[in-house]
Length: 94
Image 1 (cartoon, rainbow, N blue to C red):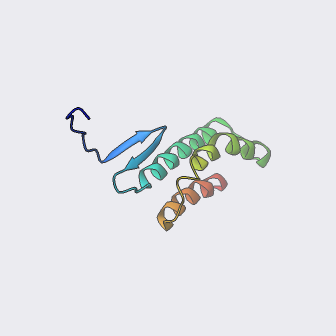
Image 2 (cartoon, rainbow, N blue to C red):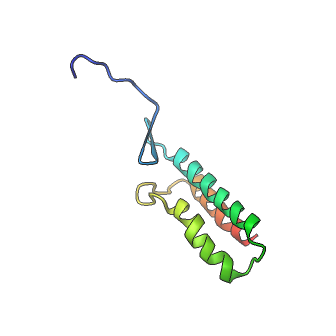
Image 3 (cartoon, one colour):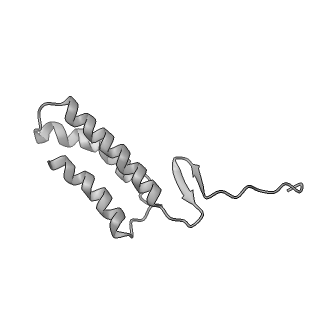
């Protein structure tokens, strides 16, 4: 393109999805889990009650969307990535 060389990058972020040069999605899982854990911690600090009537709707509205973000693209086929997601779900019950 007009003799302009393109810069080689290891990772590019577009629409909040990180695409690496080796097409490894692990960074996306880590970011999603970090955001979900942040929201889960906020819920636990803010609400004294741990009743299911309060916690489940909050989880569905505030935590789960982070874990389900781009789930069609980020096909969880590595055990370590699946365990990252499941750990957040287990933390809800603790």
